[in-house]
Image 1 (cartoon, rainbow, N blue to C red):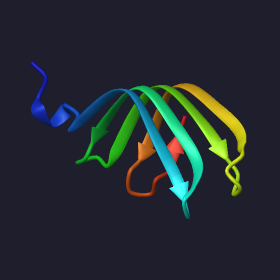
Image 2: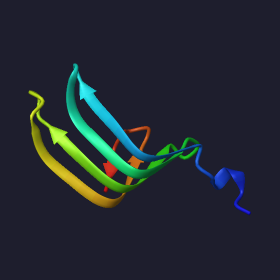
Image 3: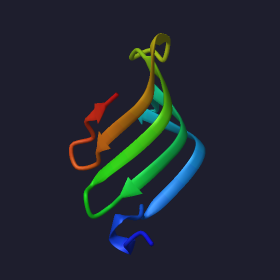
Length: 79
């Protein structure tokens, strides 16, 4: 058995997260699987694809990674 404190507080599959600034899309994050650990303030992602957009909303680049980690306090992402 896995102790409850080691289980994620939230889980999601085939997720799409839109990040915007002043109403303009700045990034779209796709993840095959994500786990949120509130006590550790981290989110773990698997099967990551991120599309980035400029200030006018035009797609500028794409990042792909098998895994990623988000520091939920600072919003820094590592992939």
